[in-house]
Image 1 (cartoon, one colour):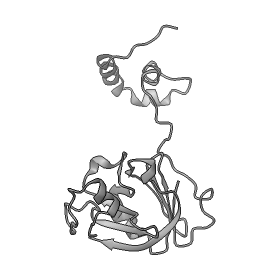
Image 2 (cartoon, helix red, strand yellow; image 1 turned 180 degrees about the vertical axis):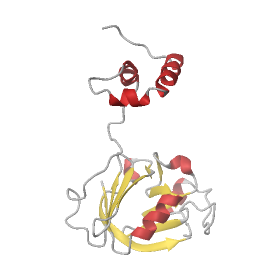
Image 3 (cartoon, helix red, strand yellow; image 1 turned 30 degrees about the horizontal axis):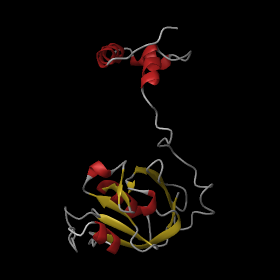
Length: 196
């Protein structure tokens, strides 16, 4: 079998040609198309895929709901107590392993329009940072914050959407503001949280 080299021009031309035949391509069951084969040889896949999970391997029950944060796949999973709601959100995660906390905790406080103060460790690393930022568009905690039983750790929003899907935080878990608002409405004080 000859080796395919997929150039951008060939990819665009092939993709444009297949737009009109989407239903035909989807109905094929015997093997990959030539385009799929060429792409799979060129694209490195994310092995920690962003996929749905079952809560049972991680929690004994769903009392007050449950939040699972998977640091490797940079995903937050939420299950309601009665299992009627399941949500999956992309997140930002801590920059380094030494800033990452793993294990069981719970939501101890919920704040809409949170204030932000750098932790002592943040201030030591970044002495130029302000001592306080009030609620609003410049607040690093975004529009909502879920405080955890671990001091200084939060699940919160961010106005800097470039951070989502990356290692970019000083220890907290960040969500798009619209996602933290949704999670904020679903969770309660006492909702169990597990970071893995």
